[in-house]
Image (cartoon, rainbow over all chains, first blue to last red; front, side, top):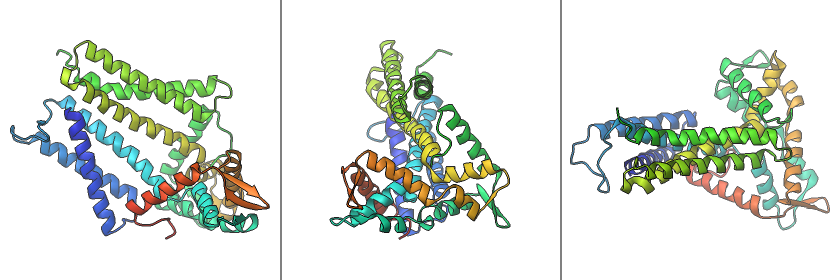
Length: 174
Length: 177
């Protein structure tokens, strides 16, 4: 019960803090800032529980008794944080399918002309923002007029190339 | 030091994820025609069942306090579900993400690419063609008299949900707002 209650309470606190900060100002490097906030909340929460007086209780539940319960709370917090980060990344950028479906829906009931549809879905909307993302995340850098991979970008590329081989994915994709 | 059960509970969702990954990889490689998505469901289900079985086995062996059995099962299923969700997105990133495709193109090129070279290899046209095939194939959109219309409402509902989440969390409907 302690793992469930304290794990969920900490993630809830981190989420509320994140919503408040995001309402005040959107950080430039959102995922990095969010990770820092969530892990600061976890550290502060674990330290507070560790140093809590014996009489301290939440919903009638006292702080964890041993290191394994603390580690279990950390595992719950980290797994939920990672799941949220991934969902957030998907929210941050407009997916091509979402852009396409919303464009068609906005053109109803008459429907969206094929040619007009092609004009709306340009490289500026679908590709350039993602190139800016990989530059901002320091996975790619500019060398003259060439885009080149940083060691971080090359590592990411290798991981996914290896995984795609493992699942027999086709050459293209994306 | 006697085994209290706490340390075993901690490992169960991690082992569940390992089972999930193993069965997903085995099924996608060994079962012809299964496809990636169904292999993900297969792995996730088998991993989840292994978490549940391990928890029930521990509660039967009295390694879990009676009052803690249900909360521990819920906690470990939440952790397993989150880890499984992360794994699903990892697979999805490798298959559909534009950022990963850009990194792969640059990696394969070896020498780096100019913007024009990159756009020759990967551009909005390629991306739209693939997604149109998927959306038309699944009936989410239909083409009548050279015009696209919404077909089945599933993808539209998902898109509207995502836009609503963007409004709540980011305060805007689109990255271009």
